[in-house]
Length: 123
Image (cartoon, rainbow, N blue to C red):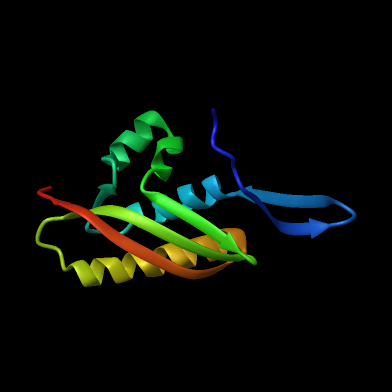
């Protein structure tokens, strides 16, 4: 049985129609933004940039949970960091990058981005 996908209208024009986005898309955008931050090895579940290129972006949303309430987006990310990185610095960069990217791409307001460090790896 497939999990229910939540969708949200981000633009509505009575003449042209509406633009609807699912929480899966917000999750993928969030994960891709997090993976762009230097020091992030992968999303939780070992989804690395190389695997995403081979398998496709659908698996990238693992390790991301999205909740939308009154057009405010709350995002929880689980990431794996490279060894010897400053956890607080990398986490702040991930939060800023994800917030900015989601807001710019969707027009939705990001209320918070929670970063969970699931592991640290030598890389």
